[in-house]
Image (cartoon, rainbow, N blue to C red):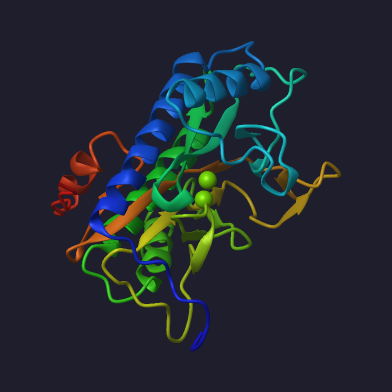
Length: 282
Ligand code: MG
Ligand code: MG
């Protein structure tokens, strides 16, 4: 890409407002996490997330987005992303559930600041390779976030994800990377430029600049990543029926390093393990 829309550059106080939205997304996912158990419906999880969101004074930003009907996406087993919560679907022992969640809060001049984050949950006793699938996807996300510290362009994320995948085969086979869905800029809208692919891309990539905010969100599959969208026009499933995992955080670029906007500690603990000191917002 040579020409195109410019990424939205945020001031420090705008990033602080985004961190407030991010903290609410974190609370929503914490509340869902507390409720995940065998027998609960995905609609009940959705209601918990929406209540947490509204009690915090925020709005669910997924609801109504291109007509999406819920506050969270709940994607179970072979569902990769964009699963729709329903009172007919109950979590079962051994399920892997990814929950994608977002909200927006009011800012100055009529703008709204957005947060977006996803976690994968293991329900009851899951197969060891499914646990590894989630762990490796989470590791790929943190490696991608860490790679953004001091990076020249967004291409570092895909390289980091690919490296984690290559170094962590399960039963001799590497996980597969979903390529149709990618990370993105975030700010006064949930989805902004630039795209943040989870795979290596040849050629020039969008530059990293202070004041950018980016979502890093690898989606990995235990089998082939080839996928299709169900008749509900939302739920994306693997063609071979293999399970998928999805982890996501929104990350600010500040002073040449990073701060995770959707983690309670700004990502300090996970990034310290990777030799990175997070940026301060104050
Ligand atoms: Mg998301
Ligand atoms: Mg996202």
